Image (tube, rainbow, N blue to C red; front, side, top):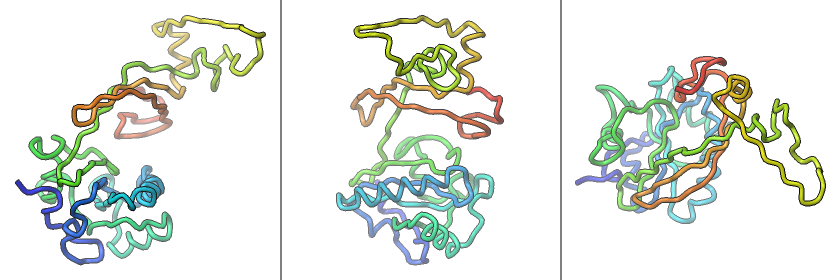
Length: 231
């Protein structure tokens, strides 16, 4: 069966066989856009490129205009924007479509249950990790415990703020909060949340902690406006 690096993709400069030239590398494939709220991710992607390119790793950007028409420019305009705004050096393709009847064969491969991750691309800056063998690898993150930092942790608008306060040598304090209590859940609504999470990658399991927060509209997470809660 053909792999990722066997698929014909035109480079953003019009030259053929973008992927064949990268065969043997680990790649992070990302559908990108220049006018998206997530566009600042270019900075982190380029940092990743600079840190790991010496280990036969590359980011590959695939410009797409299907989400909110947020990549309307020409290939030349995209290159100019990426280079002048974020100093992007990683390879990029010509504009392509990632969903629908005109979906590029590359994204047929990436979204096939047999060769990638089944389902539609939902927004800009979705990522696929490709191994040196040209196969897509799956990383799944399962949050199992969420802690709102505005409740008893001394952050933000927490009325129980004692974080960093000296209470005497050996002082220990515990508190229990009922998150079904409206008075408590109301405090959590505008809080950053720390999550303990289980990560699985190609059958291997690991644990970690991550922090997230969202203010205002963020369609991929299901936040329609400032007052929305996670679906």
